[in-house]
Image 1 (cartoon, rainbow, N blue to C red):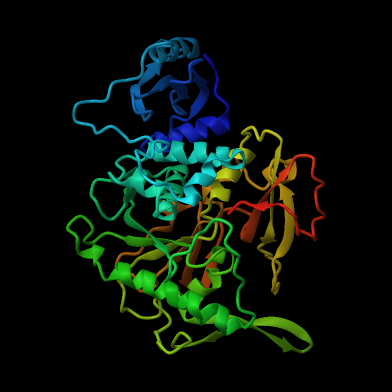
Image 2 (cartoon, rainbow, N blue to C red):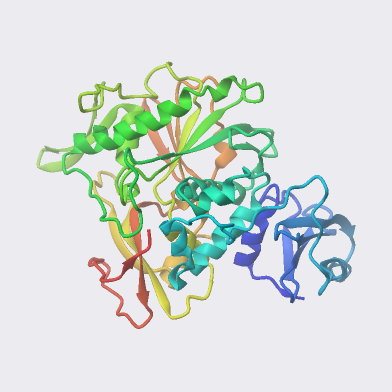
Length: 465
């Protein structure tokens, strides 16, 4: 067996029920079999300093299954021998139990006509994303029977968002289960905090081909950005889910319930639509004014979205939807995200360079615009942005809390997200990571291409969105 690098261990650990949470018995060594069909870790109790083992092997359908988890070894060498023995180098994959359904292979379209966006994963530029999407798919505790087929065809983005969300949850160490058809996920931490989460995507009124679609741009007017068509699309998307009254299901009653939203309503809209969600949820927006010769941001409130619909703004401004505890959001659910996580963690790029450009959140008091950046994601500068030394799944995850929630979502449940909540009469934003990305795009170059300057991120290269 050979040592398993930390980033690869973190990917495989997404298949553990609690993901990256090991409590008082963290891993101190990790190993993988030479045939790639098994991996294991040696853990150590922080109190009595004894050792433990956990070993996972591939099932016949590639799903990781636990074959041994035990504690009480007095020496690490003894634990290491136990890990090696349970890996069963060269042995066939584990059988599928009689009560388990075989997980359909994500690469096997079974006669279906795959969508163009799914077929992007065949390109060499997207092999890392394809491999990582498959690993997360295999980590689902109980995916819908149509999951693979949906991902291969017209519901690719919906399924990709569910995979991205699962990776975020397991990365933060909560117990993730799928005991019921809906909502999608039940999560719980070791303190007993729990919640139900339903994933949803904002889709276009008229379907379009995402591959090579001309990217859209935000409106120049602040009111239009906060309360225009994008806000209305979010309002209709969230409203449609709220009408299903998940909160009245027997297993959800009296529990926190959140909707997890990703945006695909227009080509490239996730880059600029975040303001529209804030506008719709809180009925407020920021506009720039000049006071004593200084440009400052002033907050203003509105009661309705723009347009003929006169849709009310401020979902979280009254008690009307107290059944909704929070809205979970990301502006980075894309093939690019899967590429970046894998490549920044050390995946081979085979002569390709992956470049991310956009704007960081500027924490300077009174700052009105983000800080521009343009970085090779394999560079030390980029990896140093994250304590893991690679881009985390939860880096862009934001949770907007409903101040009138009947059952508030505990912030400690998902502590590695950015949280928006009311305190002292104002909306407070708290980030887990020191670096927050306001928006970004990811581009792919040949490795021989010249790196652009930091403040000139216009690249004649292929967009990876």
